Amino acid sequence: MMIVMKEGATEEEIAHVVERVELVGCTAHVSKGELLTVIGAIGDRDKDQQLSLDGAPGVDHVVPIAKPYKLASRQFKKGEDSVLEIGGRKVGGTNFALMAGPCTVENRDQMLTSADEVAAAGVTMLRGGAYKPRTSPYSFQGLGREGLRLLAEAKERTGLPIVTELLDLRDLDDVLEVADVIQIGARNMQNYSLLSEIGKSKRPALLKRGLSATVEELLMASEYILKEGNENVMLCERGIRTYETAYRFTLDLLAVPALKEQTHLPVIVDPSHAPGRRDWVEPMSLAAVAAGADGIIIEVHNDPDKAICDAAQQVPTSEFRELTSKIEAIAAVVGKTVSRA
Ligand code: PEP
Ligand code: MN
Image (cartoon, rainbow, N blue to C red; front, top):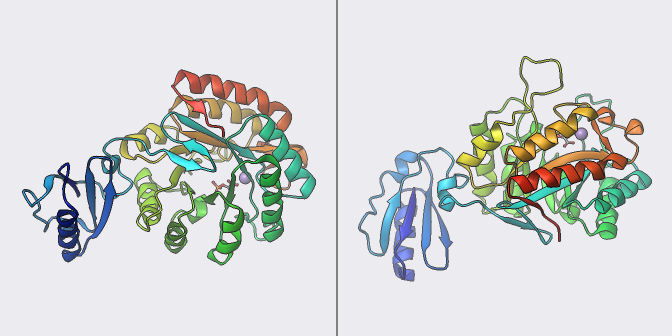
């Protein structure tokens, strides 16, 4: 539940509420606004129901949060959208994040050429994987630390914030050296120890929806990051497994308005992995913007036919500018602007 303090509530009154919240075994999450302080009592529902704080000194009113996710719920931010600030770019609200770059970092020439070209198109952030979650253990697994080094070089050249995946906690410190946003891949959405550590790191996170996860499971997973005090979480729809075999995954665009109704967190769409084919990436990108997404993360490569992974779905940099203009046009229709420094 949320305890909304009266305007001008004293530090003592706030401390008293925090003490009561902790006494019933919940965690108190204090958020101080300009006028009001709101205290979230985070824990099991039966615990917070033992709190009777109506009429307590300094308390204005108490709002029960019926959902199992608390910090992620829209109610927790009084209905407002969270606006994250990442490397000088805003994400959320009216700020649309255009993230693009190759599926994986392959070599210096490929990474830097792709980076220069997506930067010239005016993206918000640059993506590229150094650690790749591959279905086959015999496939290319990513360049690892060398890949991170090339991402650092691309960041230095373009000034763009970097989005890159962390696959294994053992690489956390290395990834933290370059990542402005840590991507948590679909296959790790329910790796709760990984989520908690990313929460503790406080680094912005892009949490991708698991292949067979429900919208509620995605929100519960985000709660693992949020509960460690990391408020910089973006959710990402990337396609789910259904009975349909005509494409790789079913891009569930209805998850966008469904998530936006339930959470204040920015909702991003990955239009690349579900089609698995580059000619279907544009319609899915535009549909995602129209559906109200706060951003898209799209795979773009300087020479996709030679790409080591996901060759069929990566958009050539030569076609990306035109796609960017279309994305900007649809974003304008829904009241959003592509976020740039
Ligand atoms: C990726 O973004 O390159 C990726 C592997 O995504 P996902 O975890 O959604 O499959
Ligand atoms: Mn990929």
